[in-house]
Length: 253
Image (cartoon, rainbow, N blue to C red):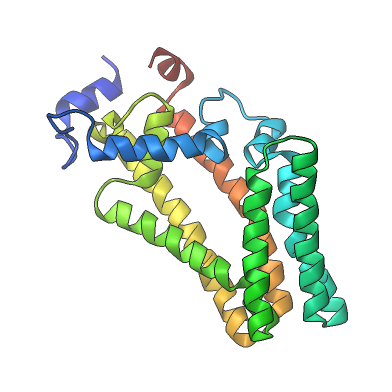
């Protein structure tokens, strides 16, 4: 008998772990919805891999083109504004680059979703910044996004349905059974807490720069705590997932 089997037989069920008699529980439906999105990006692209290569990680981040679409508009805005102090020109350069990325996606008939989402985000942020005339307002929408993710993760922890566990459980063919195994449940709690920490850390670091009107520091920390930090958390999450779902066990499930 394995340790996981002993856990399942000796440990009491985590409260709320039973499915409804009528079929799939609401948590199952939520996990499937979350995992469907995760399958196309991030952890969903690497969760089942036995080993993680740089190419795998780049693919999970959207590929070279996806990385460029995520990083360059913000970098261009920061560089142009820092050297010219011209808000309009900085916004034009940033939005223009996002438009170019989107057009290239359509011309090459590749998946345009990421580029379109990036264009919408860049455009909305630019519109707000133009409306207020404040360069730092180009980053405000990002605060709300991080706060929303942090709130969702926190609520999931409080109700004892950690969101990362829902996604990972479905990806690994485990459904919600991971909640019945104490070791796996705690690992998913921990992973959810780590992701929550990333979103909270972004706010704690960047919001003071916003109120200080320090656009350069705000833009630099936004870039550093964006894709690089996200990539580190993906690698860490993969390590934890492989620890609680060994390759042979995942294949058997």
